[in-house]
Image (cartoon, rainbow, N blue to C red; front, side, top):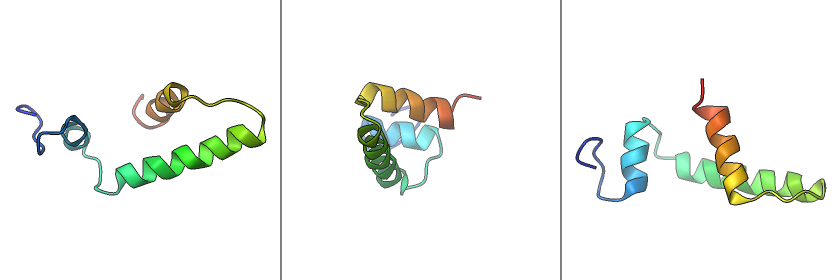
Length: 62
């Protein structure tokens, strides 16, 4: 927080450091729900860890 700013929550410090819009948490929740449905429809388990890794790989790894 001292380096990146924010209101004291770690989530806010990360959002500030990555220049995420205020709507990002809602967008991530929507993507989680959409991907859970896709996994369910394909009879596959999608864990929160897998989703987080997939999200980071698709959005922040260059």
